[in-house]
Picture 1 (tube, rainbow, N blue to C red):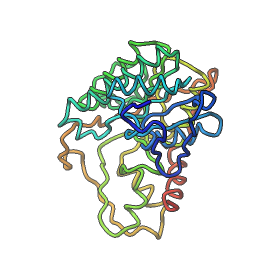
Picture 2: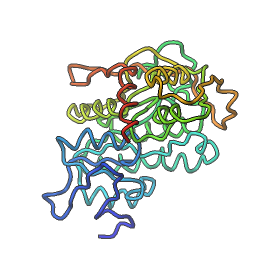
Picture 3: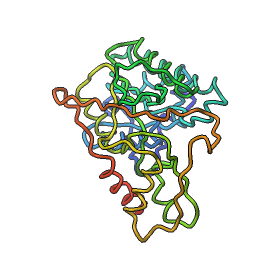
Picture 4: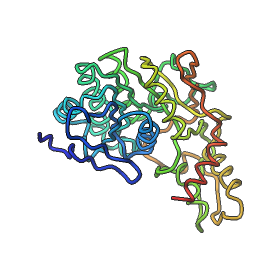
Length: 311
């Protein structure tokens, strides 16, 4: 069976275990797209202890290719699909609107349509960037979105595409992710601060940083709940700026710090895409359905810094 992608032997990042596929008995129960990304790799790790899991990277499956999505999902026939695949470079999306909508809106729709035909449960990952960041109180799932960037608009279109196919599917918005294996500012802050140089932290934004490993465990709980609807998955704790996040990391790292941390405003960075400046999500905890609150991001940061130093 030729899909135009390497389905028979998926290319997984270090630390993710491939699942041997030879017969119907070995078809995985749970399929994760975007498995090489920050959240995707943590979702695979969170699920593989209890589920038959296969993680597909973009090299394995480009979700913007409708024919490839159909061929892949009909081959594997998973019971659950978790879509962590996306075009996440916010500034690149601003200059490539067509690409942003192809990957962040069309791709989720392709997955949802085939999942619906197969009777599979779909969890689609979205973002706080669907909001404009002008609200002083945490955003609830019932608050109306108002994206101010191409990335946010494309992700909102993806949410709506999934929900239009089936209300039994779940859309999970995440925000400010950090953790081992990530390449963003929050994930590599330990490395940045323990090397000589200057680290710039934004002072005028407000967010709840969220530990990817904890968000992944929440998603695993959602798999058991099979709940449909819209959810926010973010760490507990007080909102902060990225400068304050970096300052706490500097404090926790102690004498290992070699870099100078300075504060900058978002405007000083002259980035192509606008960011929601005060975008705190209200976490969707629901003990009755087994959906837990997450731990404080400050506690998780200490764990993240320890794992970063070991990687």
